[in-house]
Amino acid sequence: MKPKVLKKGDTIGLIAPSSSVPESKAKACIEWVKSAGYNVKWGESIFQSRGYLSGSDELRAHDINMMFGDKEVDAIFCIRGGYGTMRILDMIDYDLIKNNPKIFIGYSDITTLHTAFLQKTGLITFHGPMVASFAKKGLDKLSKDYFDRALMNPEPLGDIINPPDVPIRAYNGGAATGKIVGGNLSLLADTMGTPYEIDTKGKILLIEEVGERPYNLDRMLLQLKLGGKFEDAVGIVIGDWADCEPEEGEESLTIDEVIEDIVVPCGKPILSGYKIGHCSPNITIPIGVEAHIDCENMRFAITEAAVV
Image (cartoon, rainbow, N blue to C red; front, side, top):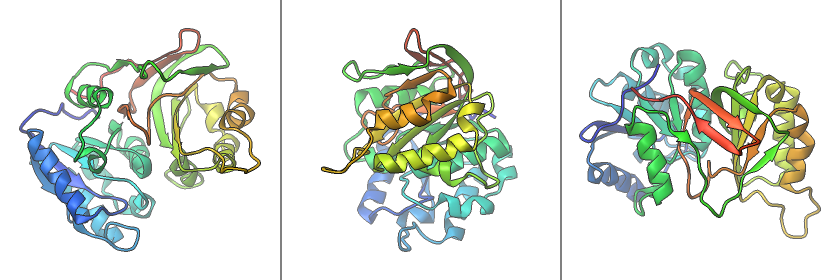
């Protein structure tokens, strides 16, 4: 279930399946798509607001179904995350998606959609930048390189390389190969015990987070551990922990200590520190394709093409 490559002149569908954005930012998203050389359609959700949501659950689910069903739409870009995708998982037409594979990209709250689409339809999706975050300023060079290659090149992404000043840390040693799954830690924890719970058996698990204190990371990582998700995985890739430091003066474990206490004892190869998630750069990672990690050589690579 690989989508077709994105080409200039294709039509991009913009949706807001989680939280809303100001009208000015929604318009900036539309203008960015046009200026980048694409046609654009947008769902009603990008201009709607209902509390912390971009419109009603029915509207947001309708936008997803509509964009997958629209034969003129070649790719679907989520304009932001926030909160709300958990509320619409039961309203999505997974058979429609299975019969109309398209590029689908976003991160953060979009994690639940990545997981549901992959497990219920087999569709390869993309954990990567959302339009509202770069419509006015553009993408930095590294983010743009991975974004373009992931969506527009029918070849594997190959090695995922951080900026030179951002080190990678390895735990446990060893190497592993498997399909990569995962995304935002909060959303992965939220799906535990539901029909949309992530399957990590034989997979490489990607996790990242934003704005959580170490004790909250501890709680959510422990939930995954007790649910067998680290034990089932063949390896783990840890992305960015944006704004996850303890508050000033707070008695706390460090993030490294939390990882060492909860994740490392699974004994699986772990690479940590990648600029994936709520950060800049934000490296695009296809979800559901084959990947390889090697702790001895500090290497994380996407070894299977995500588009055809």
